[in-house]
Image (cartoon, rainbow, N blue to C red; front, side, top):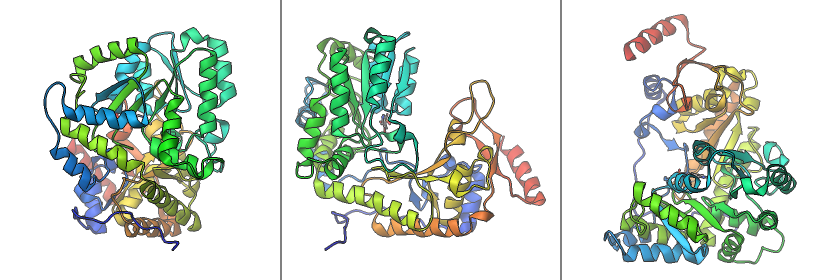
Length: 473
Ligand SMILES: *Cc1c(COP(=O)(O)O)cnc(C)c1O
């Protein structure tokens, strides 16, 4: 049999409210054409993010009933610790309420002015926490990682030559940490090879710099190693995961990704001094070291999630479903970032809507049309997100992408077929799409709350729009 099916059946369902185009026009107007401002009940297929949106299994829900809510020394912490240690055997494992809390604590300890943190590509909260500490975040992904059409199998790899040159130039004493983000989220969810992890570790050892892994999608990365890296075809995913972490001195983790839960994270490391400082900070903001901002039941759900996420039937289905979406979009002539990442497919909206200039936001135009046409919510990653400069001017971002992030175990193949059909139809009439203009924006992080006006409104509509807008202020 060649058909790949969802390796689960459904016991509990969440109804999706169907809407028509007319309703969606009014919802979107009320949201000022910003998809972050929509009520999720008005979305049919929500591909805004894969973070914290996983379905939990019957076993995870059962584990939650076992959660022990003691303030200190809960057996749920032991179960959490055992499950993490099994895959990532660091001597200190500290739970946090999500990934960025682990980052904040880590960089409060080792960051600071004059320091550099190196990474293949820093995720945005990682970069923000490093910069908040006064340190600089440096991205050193290989050149192929920045070329959307390049089919390199491990586009998340660190550029080893650049890494060593940077260390030599700035001095190892100014580099408290090197990180590897697996998979490379901000670089399109692209994996890092075992060979590259080893080579990065080798350079780190040479200069006595610890290597930490941003582990959010460690299981998806391990599956790509099994599928694409010679010598790993027959190695169990669990063994691959253990090998990955054997090269690291610590990790940060968002359990909202590959621990298959809706909230949680951890910080782990072998350095006892750093760990002591981390636990002290943890008590200030997160909680006692055996719960770190989580309930006992959350720790139980993570422990069970970690067993399920390395299941090879699950990973086969997971990566196949992303690739199924990608290959059908390619067939329909829609330009995407290649090859597909683990958790998302990125449409190259600037190439698809080449008649819309970057400063009229082709990514936003496509995301808006996906919602109007079929109730699908996706995320612009382009000029709306990155175009505003610190000096108040606006420039085109390097790319205008629309990210279709796939929540884990949530949608079936027919949902994905629906997305493919919608995008195929939009692509056939893409000449009709036009750009947008921003009519209001905050000083920072404008993509979350900016208000837009479509540029193709007729005069009468514009008048109504202006009136409604004035009334809303
Ligand atoms: C999501 C994510 C984080 C931050 O985790 P949160 O749980 O959202 O705080 C850090 N790094 C990467 C690569 C991520 O994808």
